[in-house]
Image 1 (tube, rainbow, N blue to C red):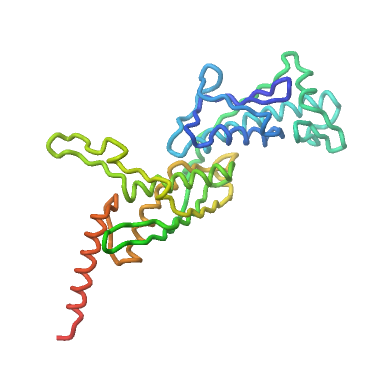
Image 2 (cartoon, helix red, strand yellow; image 1 turned 180 degrees about the vertical axis):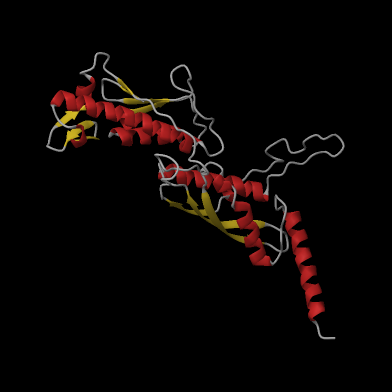
Length: 302
């Protein structure tokens, strides 16, 4: 993390943002640690010539892996700022804090960050930070639960997902809007995985038959149900200095089971393969009907 002479900060890292809001989250982490408005922090991604190597963006690992390193680097900058200010203005470091782009003293003194960096020959402060391994015997675990409401047409096998409730524990929530959007996107993707997306192969040639979006049916906006999400914002202090956990793939995982259980609750039919097409739904309904008839016959008095 580099604090420039104009009081702006830059986060330098080789990580990537693949649409999950990583850039915003890293800027928020640095801004909080430096006491800067968010608009005064920029993030430069994906350039190993400027910044240190970073983890890949995958496996729900970016924020819990790179976030602690960003916080440590920003904390290193903040420490240097307090040290310089304490020497220059003859105050103790312990009474200094960083707020709104200023160094604030408990006795009432206040100095803009630009004034502090202006005391340096090169006019900037560079802080470094890293994220080490997990504590022995510990892993980053994200937890979640989802409940689905569905409507099933028993004549045609059509399934409509009407509502999904989702609660996810991701440790400390860095960006609530981004996290909620991640949950919604994961659920929408999982609805397609559960109900319509199917890769079909020609058994003779092995050629993929569902090569177009007309054949491989993704959910459209008409298929998106009401999604009610809640985040459990409890930092996991055992893992890192940030206490945040990943939320990339986890929202996708519970949806199919929630839909299948809702179908069983509504119809008594068990579906055990994905996607749950109309044909699969009708097969499960027939099987459930046959099972019910067999149970009634078995329970009838001799």
